Image (cartoon, helix red, strand yellow):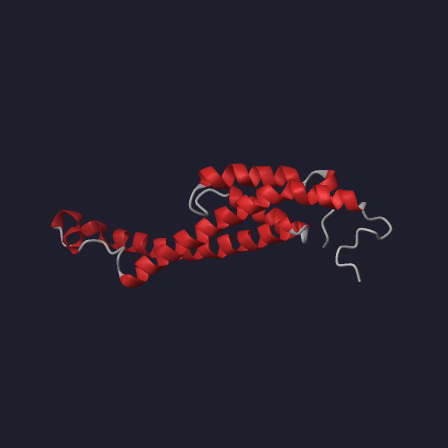
Length: 151
C-alpha cells in the first residue's frame, strides 16, 4: 500500500505533494530548532532550581530593609520553576507539531505548533519564534499546501 496516497481520487497530484513538502521544509525545521532551544533552556532552568543555583542570596533575604519583600522573592522563585515546566511542555508540543508539519501530517497540530511559536515568553526568544511562526502559518495556509496534508 502506498504510504503517500497521492494517487487516490480527489487527492492532489504527485507534484503537488513534493511542492508542498519543499514549501514547509524550512519553516518546519526552524520551528524544530526554536522548540529545541526552548526545551534546552527550560531544562537548564529546572536543573538550576533542583541544584539550588537560582536561590536568592541569604544576605538579601536577611536585610531588614527588604524583609517585607521576602515572600515576594520566594513567590517569584517558585513561579520561575513553574514557567520552566510550562515552557518545556509547550516546546515539546511545538517540536512534535513541527515534525508533523515537515511530514505533511496533522494540519491542526501543525497549526498549533506555529501559533505556540508566536506566543511571547514561550521558548528562549520571541525574536526567533515570532517570524518563524508567522512564516509557518503563511506557508501551511496556502491552498496547495493545506490540501497536501494528511489527517
